Image (tube, rainbow, N blue to C red; front, side):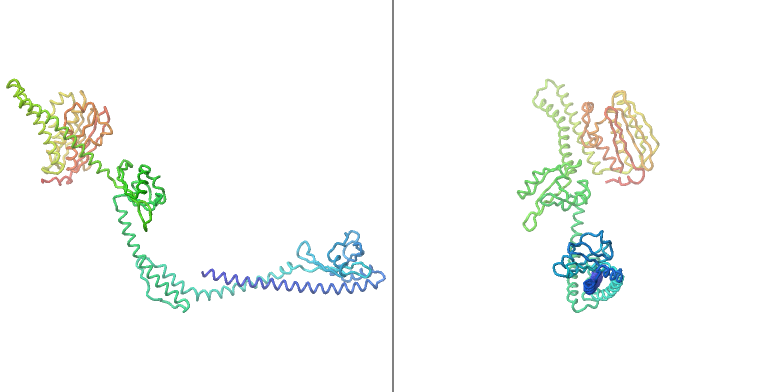
Length: 580
């Protein structure tokens, strides 16, 4: 605003000066024109009187031309336009002058005038013509500066005046704008602090303001207090809503009625694997093509909440969509993405566990029921059959009890029951005892065990660690091929003890490797289906490792064998294994 006032005053002064100079120049030039015209009328009148009385008009005219050489040009033309006398040029080479404007005017009215600019625009030619009594035309011309040349001659003065006017305008504008803008500038500075942290609105105007501006400034101060309170309230609400939205575990997306994204929280961006800035304004149907949009559109039209399961990026989400209204009009759509992968996985495990337990229990129970039915109906032939069926029932019952005990044992391990710290565990001694114990099985399976073990120890439950090692080596032997090998390695790595069991057996399919530690799960290989087992061994191993704060990893390739590596911490990390 200050610059605008400066330039307004300066422009006003300059325009006034330019207009004044132009008008003055034009009036002065017009005065010069009138003076030149009057001089030429007097001169042509005198020359016309003299030429009438002269015996030799041409000699008379030559005498006048010589006397006025450089100031007057004299031309005498007969009634046919032929030049009879010319003071400045060769009359024999001159064209007919009958059509000249001043000549035509003199023929009609007795006297004529004309002004013609020269080609350079720096000089002007003034012509005056008079008809003589004999019908001939006498013309006198005079050369003067043109208006442009006259104006150019005044330019230095014009520039000087403009500079003085500009200085005066700047001085005046500074004084005027200072008195007008100072209170407004101070008010603007106070308003800029509205809404800033820690700012408090002033209750009264702290500086002098002219009485004409005081009502405006006081009104601005009143509004600033209201605006400041409103801004603080809105910021507080916005921060609360933002914190709630950003910390939600569900993805939330708000779109308009055409499904263009208006707002999205951090969880939804992570689900869509996009940046917030890149999603704003985008059409959600293009960013989420996996959804059933025909169902969503139908739900919007019927004003109902729609839900659907949505697989996305190897995860499963529950997508809920509902219309959003503002003042009873449809504002947009709200999309809520809830990750139900773990829930679905747990439900699937529950169903599989129930199915596996039912399957494992069904076989011995069916056998027991069949044998009991034979005994109860008296279908046996002698006492030897009773003894035989009784032994079979006892065998199947024992198998059933063993399975139930394994399930209970796994449950106890998961719950941490009966876990005790019994001091250092030396894996080397445990492995040697297990290999020696399994020697008959190794000979029967034609499998050779190779041990490479360091004499290291860690704190743990010796009984649980023995069970872990037994399960790993037993699986490596059980799922090996005749003539195969099992490689057992125990070594220390920094603050950990590593136990590695590698076999040369049938291997595990890649798509099954993530599930081998689940209860009752057995990889579907042609060899594994022929081997008896409950499917609980690796699940027990996994939970023993977790209770010892260790880690377990598996690598396997079909027909090339399996490698399982367990890492136990050496120090006090396992001291949490206290009796419960």
